[in-house]
Image (cartoon, rainbow, N blue to C red; front, side):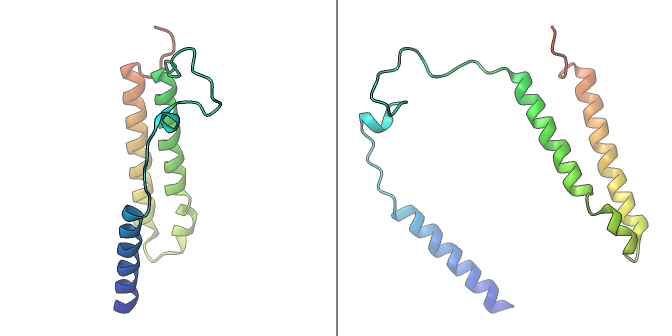
Amino acid sequence: MMLFSSMTILISLILALISFWLPLMSPNTEKLSPYECGFDPLASARLPYSMRFFLVAILFLLFDLEIALLLPTPWAIQLLSPIMALTWASVVIILLTLGFIYEWLQGALEWAE
C-alpha cells in the first residue's frame, strides 16, 4: 500500500513538473486575436450575459449534485445501520430545501422585475 501511494505521488509530481516545463508560449498578434478567420472583428465579442441564467445553471448543478449524493440511498437498507444513512440523506434534502426556499424568498428566481 505504501509503495502504491509513493508511486502515485511520484508520478503526479513528475507530470506536474513536466507540464510547467513543456509548453513554450509565444504570444503574437495572430494568436491573441479573437478570431482565426483573418478578418478583424467589427465589434466586441463580449455579449452581455443575464445573471438569471447563471443562477439557474448553478441551482441546476446543486440539485443535480443532490441526486448524485442521494442515488446510493436505496442500498443503505443493506447496511448495518440503515437509519444513520437515511438520517444523513434527510439532512441533505432538508439543507437543500431550506437553501432553495431562501433563494425563492430573496427573489433570486423572479424573472420579471
